[in-house]
Length: 463
Image (cartoon, rainbow, N blue to C red; front, top):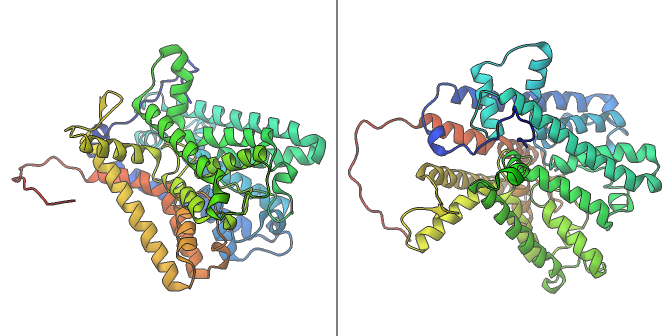
């Protein structure tokens, strides 16, 4: 989200070559990211455990930990009903955790450093560089502050639009609070809401094109990431888009259009979730559900009434997620895009992976393969452990695991029935999903060393 200011460098995509050289700070940076998010989750757990946070009863330690982890990792899976089980104080804690988890505790730390007048060292600048996905570190502080201002500004605009729409029906005082909460939840792709359990979907605006349009815009902007939004902002001036941006936009459009067509035809696949809606409302509800599946998780339909075909499409969309350096989770569109380009190049017999006239480095492809492999194995083993621990439908359990890994929050009702072991597994999966891909890339880069000798090559039979 850079480029509107003359003193802010436009971020560029960090090539694998820049990540490849070993750095003594890499392991420390990954450690700081993990410990920092863990500390935020712990603090949130303590605050949510306070008697003042519960509306009808204090939350248990298990419930507080689960909700805090889900909010900090901007997932949205929950074992309580926030609108009924949390007091105003508890809801505000939830709101703060979503904001910090979405925008990033590293970015917020820059503000704190600036306020107390402390200069950032090389280690802090390198962490910010990795978190925000930018190459230059010389003006990283000004860029981070600019990103914070823009992200908060977008949320304010979204909240204002929702407030103007909801005010006449809900009362302007109550509408202001609800608009802020759901604007933050949508932009941060967090998935928490205050309408579940009240009997009204989105406070009666669940089929309103204006409301759904505003929230879809927030979800999309939050899920596109800093790099893409920066490119789009600067496009009128430079008339060029990076390969990263082009790949992200193309795959995003394919996922949305393909998912929309399947969900619109859900009734033909024995689904009943949309059968009661007239076609204009069905279109908006289906479009919102498909866009929300890309790690936002705000639910306005009964997911358990979707056909298996529609649910599978949503699960794949969740697993892919959004763009890097964004509020979204998943293996990220870039990973999938790189693998698709590599596969198409192989099928066409092209020796190099080429996308939009640019060759993708082999290191980038290798890291994409590693991220996809580790993510798939993680989801497989967590699903297996949950199935061993309890009886349940395979697809429903896998859907829940993918939702946790991708930090989406869509649920078929499995999470609420899990025991303590199962809930801790989901907490671990949410935590890994938020930090795993980033820390994996950093650790892989840390292990790369110049080879002093070369071994002879030998073909392996595959396929």
